[in-house]
Length: 450
Image 1: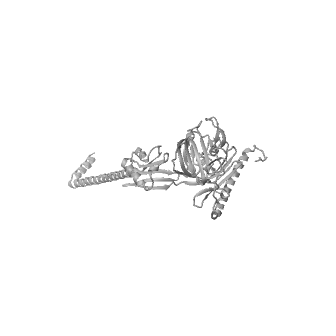
Image 2 (image 1 turned 60 degrees about the vertical axis):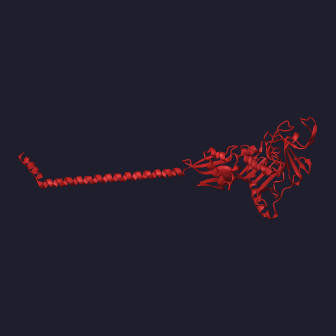
Image 3 (image 1 turned 90 degrees about the vertical axis):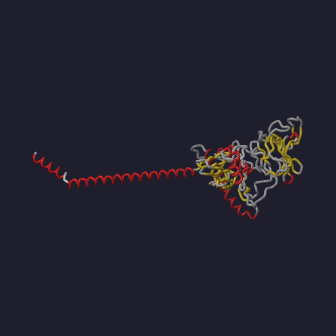
């Protein structure tokens, strides 16, 4: 115990001596200095990190604002009926001076007074609601784009970037051509386009029969992978049993597309075969001795009555000039057209007239709506035709001949005709094969008679 106490005593004496005290102070100061440096380094690093984080947050906020300002918000809406384009833009929240500038800057490219109800309007704005672009669907092929370029607007007309594919459609008529085409998964517009081709030779109101066949090779347009409508019909065929019609698309001498029969004669003639397109049965025919249902006596009926519902569209059967449009006694509201080669056509008992005297109309143009004005027991169209001042039976009238493919274009026409007729024949053969297969009973080896 004595020796232990002596060691402690000696050690304490040494530590309390001046040299050792100095060393301890130096060591303690060094430790404190090192710790201070370490703490300062930690604080500096933390400050640098916080500053970098703040900078990144600021940059991210700026990027978010830029992205938000560049992000587009699109809305598509059909132009409502009886609405001007200016009224539509006003309804979208645009100010009057902006609307005026849009109309003014667009006028050199397109007159916005000519917009049509039902056509699509696309509004493109930023996320903050700033107007960037306006799109208007002029027709199925063209789009008007109005882009905001301070201090005004820049307008241009662009073709809609469709992807076009060629398709073949065929079928048999059981009740109507509309239903026959619909059964193949197609839309009414294809029916109308198809009927327009043969409208000069075949009246789809009265001549369609169960068992008729049709074949058509048509362009289909797609936008972003979705079906967007029909393009040109390249070739068409209709077999009514009694008559067999074929048409091939080819460019006429002026460079315009037109349909020709295989013999090179144009399908389009001077007159359509009906003033109505569909669903209009003949209720009274041309006659010099018909009992009048209202006057109760026999009188000549020098026209054709079509039993069309009230408000059905009436089309001009040929190019011509309106020489009368108004009320004409027992004929009610009436339109009279003068055509070339001494022909005149009459459209009676109308509910509404859509043309005026002196106006030039085109074949197929809608000129009126059916009605029951004048001496009429019900809604219908009384259609008449004169040749050199004498009424003729339109159903029996031999219409003016069609033009033919020019001799210089015949080699090119032959190539197109050969290719398209081969396609129609192939389509017809495939359809016939399917029908024969459906008629065979299971396990039967006997051939079905055609």
